[in-house]
Amino acid sequence: MSAHSANHLEGFEAPLHRALTEPILLGGAPRAIAIVNGTVAAAMGLGLQMWIAGLALWVIGHSLAVFAAKRDPDFARVLARHLRQKAWWSC
Image (tube, rainbow, N blue to C red; front, top):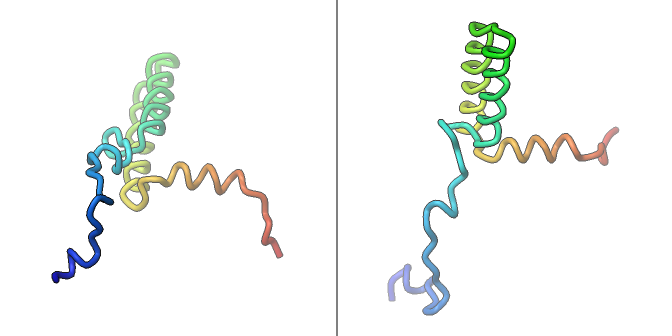
């Protein structure tokens, strides 16, 4: 009996599509953060007519989001939960 068949129970296996297990990223950044970052940068660049500052904001914001997503794809949810938590264990 092989090691794989020892851990495998017949009938208790279901195939999962890769899209169900991977985070939704847009250009390497979490989707919601990429959309908000792009919208704010476009508003600054087009609405306020400060296109260099808008472009710089987009590049810096997207780069930081990609860097954080490489370390932890769920960093946005973890950060949001961390900010909502009360200081239960404060000294």
